[in-house]
Length: 181
Image 1 (tube, helix red, strand yellow):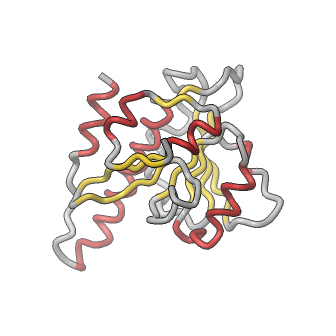
Image 2 (cartoon, rainbow, N blue to C red):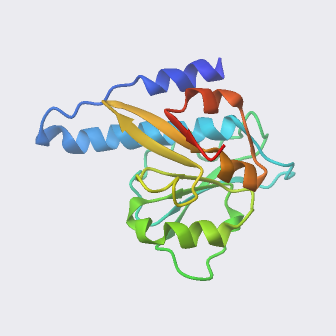
């Protein structure tokens, strides 16, 4: 059931027909990407953390806006039994403790810092996600991409393995690209 929902999200089209539709498409695109992130959480196994909230952190400029996560924020995740919260971290600075996040979405505004950000996380169990071409080659785990008018993802299996997170095999099979086996 969960996999069906995730795979259906892959097929949700967004219209890029004209410049006037651009803002509406961006809004839909990031709502879809927020839904993917939510489902990535459902397909990822973290170590037990008691009642600590499940934290999605957004590093850099927030492309999601306020409404993209509003339907799931403060809800209890069925797979982890933990409440989900979303935090905006702002611009990356040296010394930031990114290891307090369960999921770290790294905005394209931080593209020049990808390698430093990934290095600062080290082997921590933080699922790193972005939507920028160089993210998985710079050591990130999941990169959201547009294929035609559909949102899909690429995976860096080596980065996932290094973190000791366990992703459901369906995420690997459904990815458009897997590197770092």
